[in-house]
Image (tube, rainbow, N blue to C red; front, side, top):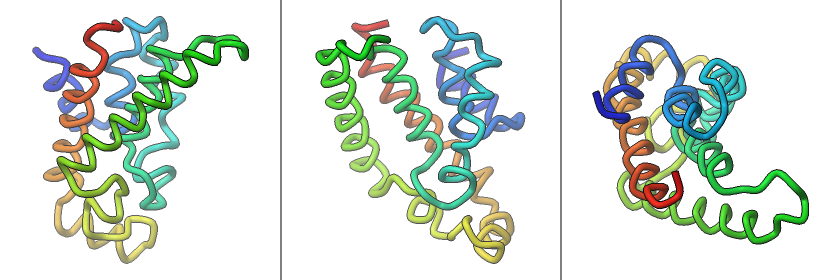
Length: 148
């Protein structure tokens, strides 16, 4: 099973979008999957189900940080490289989906009770969100191929 397929499967089994993306890369980046899922839990639904930046996107940003950024404050070069890769990721994701926020991607404001109910009624969590998880993992695999 590919990383993409596994991440989507894990999302469909109950991980949120951020967790599914981070967990897929965690072990090879030195973080156990359980810790990665705990760390990423609050980022689902556009950061705490506010409709902000998509969890698949924030999960991908966490993966980029784990893969590139050095642990010490003087690691300026790795911080700059991390920011470059984050911008590149955002550009590619936005080019593919025309947005990076849940609100725009889903066409419902999941940050409100009415918008969340509408998203559930339309089934977007089962139909659209897996596409965003898949896309985030694919972009990361291409982007980080030489790094991890």
